[in-house]
Image 1 (tube, rainbow, N blue to C red):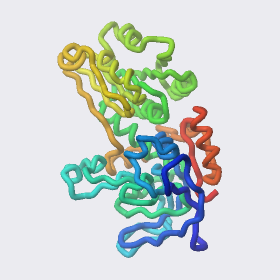
Image 2: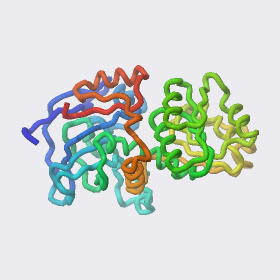
Image 3: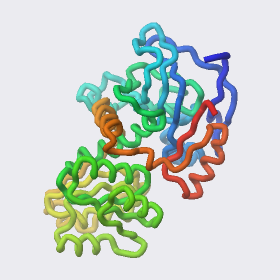
Image 4: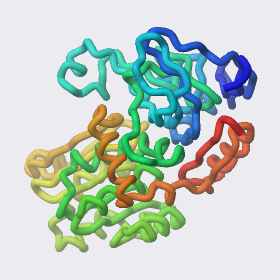
Length: 352
């Protein structure tokens, strides 16, 4: 580390895009840790922050630096932080309080008073800067040898893993709806843990091609086929045993209940923007004795340990989901590619 300033993306006012500017390198206090950011992955929620739409105004607070899928190297510690200089770390961006019911119940990922790194919630810092500040308790120290790109990808992979783990998918037929980054990562997880078969559905032929390449047993283009009818035909009218809903499309979410077999399980990962409606509540919900779960983030730090092992052991190759890499100075080009629908996961390098 040389000099007293660094390059960072910042959001200081409402409106489109971020500012790319020189800012002071912060000094860690108390249990804070200064990390050099090695890589930061762009999330779909970063589109909201970039455009500053209504969703952004709920999930973020100005001013802030974006970038919550972050990998770094420890370069300096505050007096109460004990991490070793040079340690490779991932950032658990859900800043839990440690004092609420959820935290005491070991569900820190849904802390009642949760802040969020990269969103201006209880911290102005994010990963889109050459250096960033994170309290030590929100850092996951890597035990295995992963690249910066792979460490950054543990955050979104962790969401997919949390969903699949709750779904109890081993030995089961699984329908994954939505083949965006998290849907594809969920596919990788279900294959890694030994599902019986994986069916992937989407409206985009390119994403479905990626799903097939990643091991999907069956792909369904829902622009061309009625997914409910396809599933019923495919299962002899019984419905599918497990559904991982990653699209967030309200119409699709509403129809999932009718595709699930009796006693089946379903997890919602996508984020519907409209009210949910079930036409046949008795037949499709109550009489099915189904199980519905939702996820928000990762189990702290169980999920990090599980996903680190899957990647380090070569059971999941997250690099296959990364389609573009940019220096952070070219962030506008990165978002142009993202808005153009040409990317899956994009990695930014703040030092470039």
